[in-house]
Image 1 (cartoon, rainbow, N blue to C red):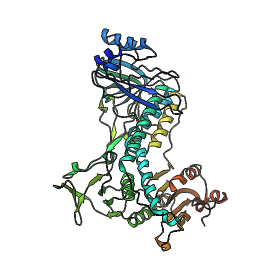
Image 2 (image 1 turned 180 degrees about the horizontal axis):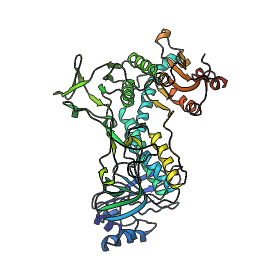
Image 3 (image 1 turned 135 degrees about the vertical axis):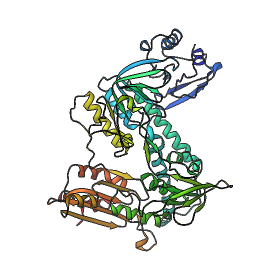
Image 4 (image 1 turned 90 degrees about the vertical axis):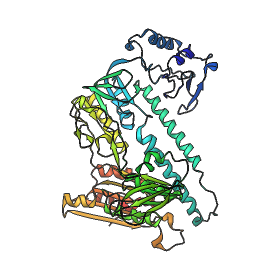
Length: 552
C-alpha cells in the first residue's frame, strides 16, 4: 500500500525533502538511545517497500482515501507524524500537494529561519494553531549559510593558527596540512543535523509547516503554491535576506557568501569585496587557512559603524597577518581567463590577476517579494516598515529580523519574535525588544566584541560629559613568542563612560578571547553599571577580562 501511495504522488515526502522520484520513497528513523535522537534517512525502492513496519497504517489509508476521493483537506491533517519509543518516525512534510486546500490558522509565520521558528514555537506554547511556510532548508541563513557554518570555519582557521604557534611552547613542528574536504563534509553534516532538529522541534510543538513560496493574494491570505491557501488571523513575515551582487561587468564570475560554503577546495588566491561583518570574517578565515587574500574596501577603513579603536586595531592585525587591503577602492570589472582564473580590475591601481575565487560581500537584500501590496504592508525603502512593536501598516501583520533592516543578527530576531509571541498570545501587553545596548561579536582574526555607544556617538549625545578608559596589552598566551614585544598580537579595550556617575554607555574590545568575554559585560552594561560598579568587582587573575575592572 505504501508503495502505491508513493508511486501515485511524486511530491510525497516522508522525510521532509522534495527529491523523491515517482517510484521511490524514504524513511526517516529516530534513534531513541541517543540523547539528541539522531536522525537517519533510508531510501526505499519498490522491491524493498513491501515489508514496512508502520505504527499507524490507518493514517496512511486515510491519506490515500483523501487523495482518491478528493475529500476536503480539513478532514485530514496536512502531516502525519508517528512517535513512539521504538518505532520509526514517518513524516509527510507536504500533504499530497496536487490536492489544494484553504485552511485558516490563528498564526501564520512566513519564513523558517531562527526568528520565524522561535516565534512560532513560543506562540504554540499557548495553544495557538500555528502554520509555518518555508521554501528552503529549515534554520534560515544563520544555520545553513551564516553564523553556524561560518563559526565552524573560523574554528578551523583558529586551529591552524594554534598549530603554527605550537613550536613557541616547545612542540615540534609537523607537516600536517588541511584536508578541506574533511571539514566541509563534517560541517555540512552538522548543518544537516540541525535542520533535522528544527524539523523535530516543530513537530513537538504541533506546528504545521509547509514547503512553498509564500505570496499574499489578499489581506492576511497567503498562496503557497499548488492551489494551497493559508489564512491567518495574525501573520508574521520573517523571510530574512539574501546576498547582494553588484552591477559590474563580469560579476557573475564571482560567488557570494552562500557560495563560500559550496567551495570544494581551499582557493589559493582570493579577492573579497566588502567592508562589513561578512567580508572581514571570511577574509580572516581564508587568510588563516593559507589563501592569499585581497580585501577590497570602498573607504579608508572597514566596519565603519564600529568604534574607531576597533577599526584601527583590526586593520593593523589583518595587514600584519598578511591580508592585502585595497583601501578606497572597488572592483569595476571581472574577467575570466582561458585557464579558468579571474582578473579583477580595480578603480585604482593594478588589476589583481590569477584569482581562483572572487567573493562578493557587499551587503544583503531583504526578501520582500511577497506581493505585499495585496495585504497592505508598506516598505520603508527596501525594508518592511515596522514600529517598535514589530507592527507593519497592516494591523494584523507583523515583521521581524533581516527583512526589517535593523540589527541583522540572529539572536535579535529570536528575541524580538519571542517577545512578540508573548504579547500577542500570552497577554503581556507592551512587551517588546529594547534595541539599545545589544552586544555583538565579529569573528574576525582576532575577534572583537562591542556593546553600547561608540566614543563618537557618546560625545554626540553627552558632549563633554564623556570619559574614556583604555588598555592595550599583550595577552599572556603570547609571552613565549621569540619576537620583539611590538610584534606580538595585541588586545585593546575601551570603556566609554558618561555623566557624573560615569555610567558605562559603551564597551569595546578586540583580541584573543574577546568573543567569549562580552556576554557577561553586556549584562552589566544593560543593567546600567557605572565605572565604580566595574571597579568594585574583584579581578580574576591572570585573564584579559580583568583589565576591564582595573582600568584607571
